[in-house]
Image 1 (cartoon, rainbow, N blue to C red):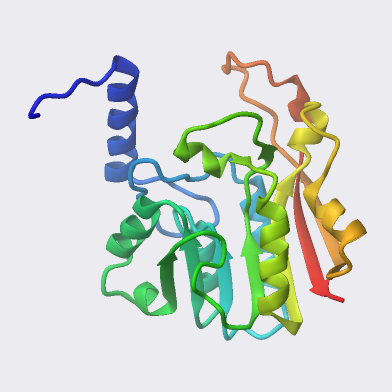
Image 2 (image 1 turned 30 degrees about the vertical axis):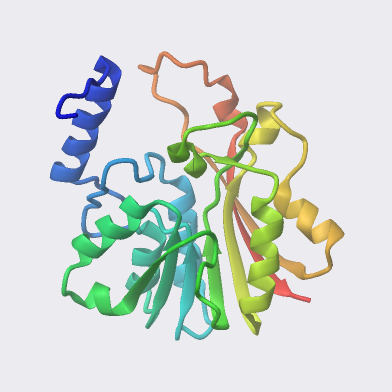
Length: 242
């Protein structure tokens, strides 16, 4: 069949995606713009990325390798390379993320420092590493959702499976860094904080430090009710193996 139909909102989405890809997206913590493929998550808020960049500036550990779970538009991997990591291994369940980053990096230094694999969580990366970073979805899944919503909502197995895999791959003196938010708690979606739950119940990791940063207030031009923004904090959790 040669003919197909798209709704007007779908056409708008495709057009917006093309503009983002063509023009690029400026991110405060990077020198170069991002050029994400259609359907690939990219940051529109940067407080958590600034928190991560500040942490990387103070990081004193080895920088031989790191694993970036859910690489998306590549922002965390690019930050790791910017701060001197020799090799970063990234994964994603979205094929457009993998293909888009391969095209973006081309035959540059980035392509030699960042290796990508299409798959869930750690996928085929089995090596031990000194740093694992994860910027997971911040809201629990409440119903069947579109594939693209996996970057926003997490299911009940995501964190247990992640922490199990991380424990196997983190070196004894390594760091596990998770970027998160109290968004689900302050909006009343859930009282359960998945990182606190892991620390309290499973005995695999211990807390080294949790850094928090109050997010910027919403624009006065937004039509959305975002009264909770005054209470929202992004979080950077640094865990080590028990």
